[in-house]
Amino acid sequence: MTPGTTAAATSSPSTGWEITVYYTAVEDFHVGTDTEVTGCTKLDCTNGQDDLGSYPSDFVDAVKDEGTGRTSSGQYLNWSYDIGFWLDSEPRTSDGERLTPCLLYTTRFTITGCGVQDDGSAPQEAVCAALRDGAWKVTDEFTPGLGGSRHIDAYIGPETSTGFTDSDWYITLTGARLTIATDK
Image (spheres, helix red, strand yellow):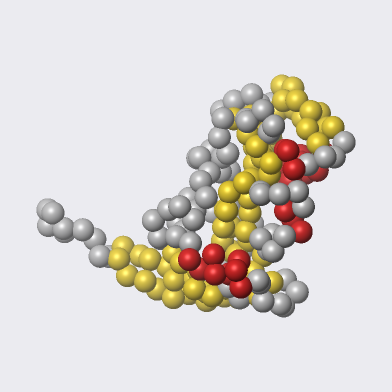
């Protein structure tokens, strides 16, 4: 490449993807029995035993399912299967990077077809349209065996209400189509 030029980007359509939408759990939307949580009080720690506080059991379960949750105090309770729980000032990816809703990023891939939900039905059109309109990029590490080689986790940010997991946004899609941008 000569000075002052930029790399050209091309798009490559790809089918047969699974997309799991995930979110940051919000403690204020959970009311389960208080559960004591132990872990690390900082990011650079593994399987700590510090007291991290008590949280509603359904919130703790959601953090384990989604990887992160915003506590009522404004801190983030993060979880990774190989680290355990830790408190932080930000939501984190499993490799410790700041987790940001990909709807705000420059496009690295686009969702051009939503496929179907687990029960074979089409997702709600408003949800599919928002996923198609989003600008996405890969920001987290690939962990072999978790979802397969054609699996994308699409992070949409904090949950927005009580019962979020019963909403149209809590979905896994199969047979989705992506257009992947590649640099030349």
